[in-house]
Image (cartoon, rainbow, N blue to C red; front, side, top):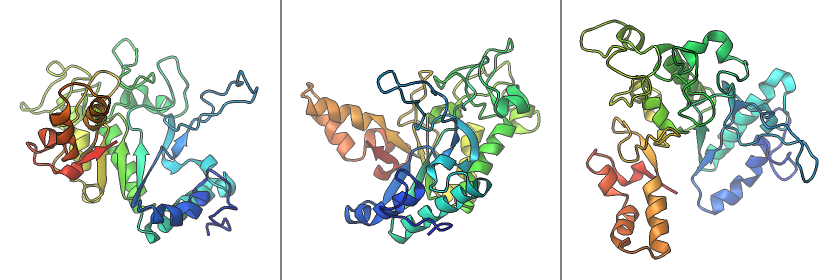
Length: 312
């Protein structure tokens, strides 16, 4: 129970509490982990327009338009906004606890690549009002870089932003006890931030660190500070870290995402090679065999194992 809300068939469908009632079935199916689509508070009114067929107003339940990285989505709670939103937090914690009682881990899909505020002409909900040029990748003339395909790009390797990201991740591990994270469009976290200079990025100017003139905004970094910060954090290095190793700007890093020996990847090669083999594309038997064996061509050289390939 969570604040009087019982999980099961009687719970409000589509809520944290209702998921609890499905856990015995999932356990019988042999499922040992759930990856939740984004549960951070997001802008559900992003597409609030009439459905041309039914006339009903349309809500965004996709979840990839984050407003707040530190709180669970209230509309996914049976208690909705009760107790100033704290009820949603209690329900989420209860859901995670019951998953663990059933031997099921909880992995969150997190969106640290863009927010709900859109491009330079978009909404002002939070980060834009705090410090537009710190939180977003912004050109000198004010235009937004759009490596996410959603209007803006989170300025992940700026020291303020990367500290926020690490704090948010640790909050979900320590307070909500989630077991890991799948990072949407994770390759954005490897791109050089705007305001890139040694002092901003590394805390002090040194001759050995890149200057703004040496690293173009958005350039892929071999050792991105935010990924290193997550990978070496005493708490976060012990949870599951899964990268969707590409972005909408054309950066594709499946097999080459900076991993510090612990990151797994959504293996898009498995999907593509398996599909090609099944539909009879010529000369695909060898590549199909490779992906069935954990894609050693992608991961063995970097010291990773078959379990670092998340096949889908």
